[in-house]
Structure formats: C-alpha cells, structure tokens
Picture 1 (cartoon, helix red, strand yellow):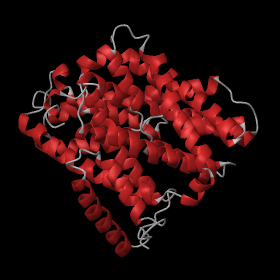
Picture 2 (picture 1 turned 180 degrees about the horizontal axis):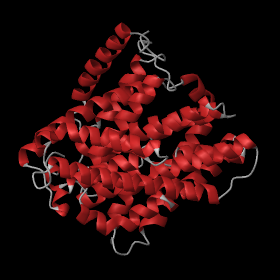
Picture 3 (picture 1 turned 120 degrees about the horizontal axis):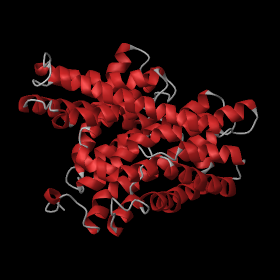
Picture 4 (picture 1 turned 60 degrees about the vertical axis):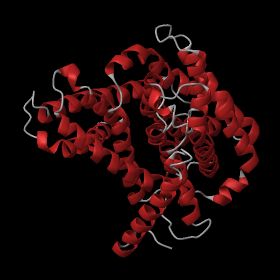
Length: 414
C-alpha cells in the first residue's frame, strides 16, 4: 500500500494516479462519459476496498492541500467561461439557488434522514447541510466535455461555485450548537454567510482587476508574457486570501476568474497569444487536479460504513436527487421572471446537482471534530458522491440531448 508518507511512496502514488487516470479518461472519450466518473471508479479500484494500492486519509494535510488547490483552480477555470452579459440576466436565479435553494435542500434531506435513518433532528440537519451544496469541481469538468447552452451552463456553474458558502456556514453553525449543547442561533449564521460571501466577492473582484492591469497591454502590462503564471497565482492567491480573512475561498476564486475573462468590460483585454497560453496551461493543470482529487476521493470510500447504512442511506440520497433538488430549483427560478426559464431548462436543472469535493471535505471535518454520528454522515455523503457522479454526471449529455439543450457545436457529436 502506498501513500504520501515518504518521497518514494509519493512519487509512486503520482505515477499510479496519473497513468491510470489517463487510461480510464481516454476510454471515456468516445462514449462521452465525464472523466470525473472514470477517475472516481479508478480510485475505488486501487483503494483499500479492492486492490489496496493507495491509501491516503481524507483528514491528512496532503489530501487537504490537493483538495484546496484543485478546487480553487477548477473553480477559477470555470469562472473564466462566464460572461458578464449572461450573468446580468440570471443573477436573481443564482442568488435564490445559493440561499433559499440550499436551505430547502438541507431541510428536505434532514426530514428524510430523521425518518429513514432514525437520526436525531440536529444530526439530520447536519447531514442535510453537508450534502446541500453542489460541487463545482465536478460540474465544471462535466460541462467541459458536454457543453450545453451558455446561459444554462453558466447559471449552474455559478450556483455550484457560490453555494459552498451557504452550506459551509450551515454546517459550522450546527457543529457549534452540537458542541455547546444549545440551540442554533439564526442571527449568527446569517451574519456569517453575509460576511463570507461579501469577503469572497470583494477579494475576487479586486484580485481579478489587479490581474487585468498587470497582464493586459492596455493596463500596465508588465507581465503580459507570463499571463498563465499570473492567473495561476491569481486563482490560488484569491482563494487563500479569502480563506485567511474568513471568507469563501471558492467564491473568491470563481469571481476572480470571471473578472479576468471579461477584460473587455474594463477595457483591458488580454493579447490573443496570452489568451491561447492561458487556455492551454489552464486545461492541463485542471486535468491533473481532477485526476488527483477524484482518484483519491475514490480510495477514501469506507465500504464498511456504507454497508452499515446502505438501504436507508440510499433512500436519503434518492430523496436528495428526486425531491430536494427539484424543490430547490422550483422555489428559486420560477420567481425570476426576468430570466424567462423554459420548462426544458428547469427540468435539466432538476437533474444536475452532483455532490463532490466540498461535502467530502465537510464530512471529514466532522470526523476530525469527533461529532457524534459523524460516521453516518460520512457514509451517506460518500453514497451521495458515488451515486450523483456515476448516475447524474454520466448521463448529463444524454439528458441535455433529449431536452435539446446541447450547445450547437455538440449536436452532431451526439
């Protein structure tokens, strides 16, 4: 068994992960299956549950480093695909999805967990909060392989980048209440959300504009030949600065990506060769991060815990997918008259809500804090990750085609 405890073992893990992920990723190209699903399955294969080749605890510093670095880069890259013109038309839907929508999801899942798992209400709410946010590290790569109409794609990607703040704040508020043995106070979590979101937005905007000024020839432009490196630093720097100031790091990275990609709005566009270099570098580094994140995530699935909660946990996950998500979408987008969502777009949003990196990290945090019932939360969370990625992510292209929502360039491929 190999893990990152020594240099030799770490190099072996890197070789196994990259080489194996390249093979399974290549095998998924023709059937148009998202590579994250293949990486996750490969992780299950080489993990302790099957071949027992790789084992890296979810609470280890190396694993946390890979999760944070990878999520920041993937979210930043996704933000660079968002256009201001589209964002202005759907901002109401996004705002409601990442606030009211997350609360509705957490509440519905909590009811299911209470009745199916017999968990206390506080623990049920904790489980609902952990799995309530969608995952940008999963959704953004899926849409790289299966592009859909721009407005819908950018709405779902923006939701996944922003709603981690709501879910995380809910989890931290409930953990604090459980640890002190008292009630959950509403004012504190609301203020924490406003603070986290505000800091993330502000830092993302400032860092993004600074990047434009440093790289664009219409600004100072001193680093225009090093655009890829500057944007790499921008992605991880905005994330880390926001986290240090108790803001949402993923929100900061996403907003920084959005701003850096919309230089024309600030009259500071990048040179064509700079954009080309950024595109190639970003594609390569985010592919590596997807490999490591999802292969390691697959190796960390605890099959014994999953088996212990299998059938009731499956009921909770199906409730999340088939009841909580549709309700979340309905209460969020139907009131947005400006966006004028069609029924096909709404149905597509029902189906697209993969669970991934952020819920996994939150469930690992509960184990580290020794929260009673953390093993149940971890088991159901990993079931949600496995099922939503292997079922929903893998069928995104098929659903988009049936609903006639594929981007024009993708219609012939399907």
